[in-house]
Image (cartoon, rainbow, N blue to C red; front, side, top):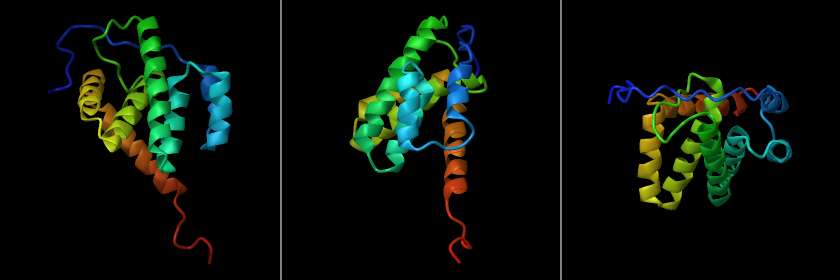
Amino acid sequence: MTGENLLGVPPTLLNPDDDVVEALGDRPLSREELEAVVRRFPTSSLVWALLSDRAFESGEVIASYAFARVGYHRGLDALRKGGWRGQGPVPWSHEPNRGVLRSLYALRRAAEVIGEDDEVTRLSDFLEMSDPSAAEAIETANFRAAQAAAPTATEGL
């Protein structure tokens, strides 16, 4: 697969949600802080994806799956509202699309851990068809975030 849009379907570009971005700020939020944001913006797939990530990092795979499932469905709602008709690109490069793609990724990750193989295949295909570069971009961002949060060798000396 080359990542080219062979269907000729225009990409779906979601509208920015500046209020959510402002509420998230520029620092990692605790689970409690993320829950407060999701109470304010329950339709934001990005906030649900971040909650899923936080739960997954804490070893709460079932909670991670549940949060990601909500983010996935909120993302489908947003895509449909944005004109998506079940096919065509959803580019990672368009930042407002990232919540949907992160929810897809988080749901696939949790489904894999719990052994839901058919779901993993379906979500892998959906993510690949949306944007072949999305999974790698998410993994790179998660790796960088983990590295930034890790204590250095000199801390605590």
